[in-house]
Length: 76
Image 1 (cartoon, rainbow, N blue to C red):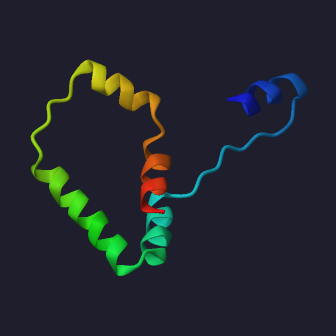
Image 2 (tube, rainbow, N blue to C red):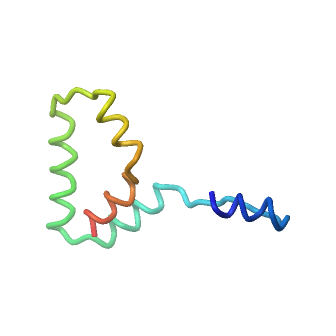
């Protein structure tokens, strides 16, 4: 957002680019050892069967968090 505000003041070409999340996840997967992969997969499977209600408060908190960064920190 700061880049957008600065671009409006200075008038320069701004291109917002990002890499696909699949590429990031693939690179993370290849960097993990067998133990880390098993923990990652078991956490994912446990999440499928977990019955958890999504309230407005939880949804608002999720919007505040950078979920991808947290996930990558956990994988790392």
